[in-house]
View (cartoon, rainbow, N blue to C red):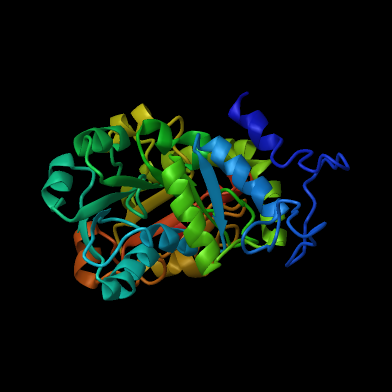
Length: 378
């Protein structure tokens, strides 16, 4: 079955008793047992809930995994994965990544004895050099946030060989519609479901998909023990969002490509970061592991004073954090999504006062281009 069909049928008729086309919202904390020693298969909604299971099962299918797990936010999902490790363990992490991931590693898990080395994972030699005897995982963001650096998932896994080092991939930007890391060798996939999977900027969620039954059992234990689970109502909203993921991603990418063309012709723009630009480093790697380019664009302006003018005067775009929704957003990474990253590292990566990030939505492209043209040429 094609992925667009799987998506449009997300949660379809999961209630076999009634035949309901939409998965019902099982808004309950607990479940009645028929008799002592008998169970319906559900005991307590922290452990399992029918609405959440329906969403988790779809995500497992989409990512070709053993099991899916839904959490209350993307950071809750990432934190659950990091709980696989113990004091004294070490993780190699992409240096260009979401600021919240950096913060939780450096300010939370570091206190529990889990260390991280942030390196350019687009360079496999640097990745290998960062690996130590106590390294337990390599964590990739590809494309990365916000510079859109591309790490080679398949090659990274090959370099790890038969070691016991897990390969974890944050697939938020591409979603399983465009990229399936487990098929490329990854062991664990994480998502901020808040973004494209939801698609409407109205729900927080996170997803973990595991490749093996052993990992599924471990993540399942952590999910149940720590309790940062997705609520039944939010699970319903995630199923509803998935139904339109294919058409949203296609439209958003179509708009993004036209915006990249516009920005490339502007004399106010000095550099554009987008996976679909053939001249960009990483382009060949990206097309070898992804079927599309997505709709995230970052760009630098020649005059840093233009940043404030753009932010304060957009009308169709909204100045806001987050990404992936049907509404187009403009973000200032240096002071918003990546403020937690030390200034010296931000400057090294190019996350500076001249960088803006766009999350392109599904609006009419003429309106989006007119909005950009107005604010860029103020």
